[in-house]
Length: 111
Image 1 (spheres, helix red, strand yellow):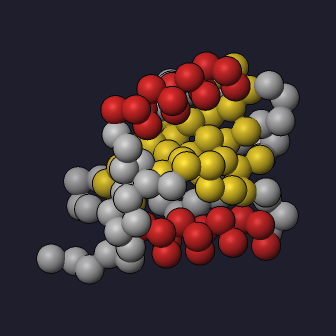
Image 2: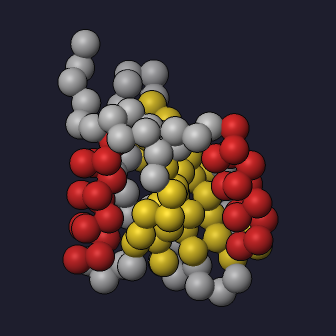
Image 3: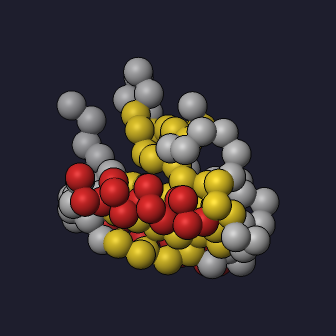
């Protein structure tokens, strides 16, 4: 079985990397420290956002899935989805990244 980095360590490293690259990123909800999954809110700074959920591909590699379909949605819709998701799964982490391009700056491919 592959040893994985605890969620809180991996997330904070990703947030620090984003901030160092000039992309403001912040944890807006803390989840389970060791194994909580991550949800990313990519805030496009124009009233729209994308929401990505952390997944594993068939080979166990980190990947991301568009939670609300392709492309951006109204930020209020993204926030409502995040609220519903965190009520169902209190272990999930939520990280918001301000990125006008909407590209995912975290490790892992989009599937």
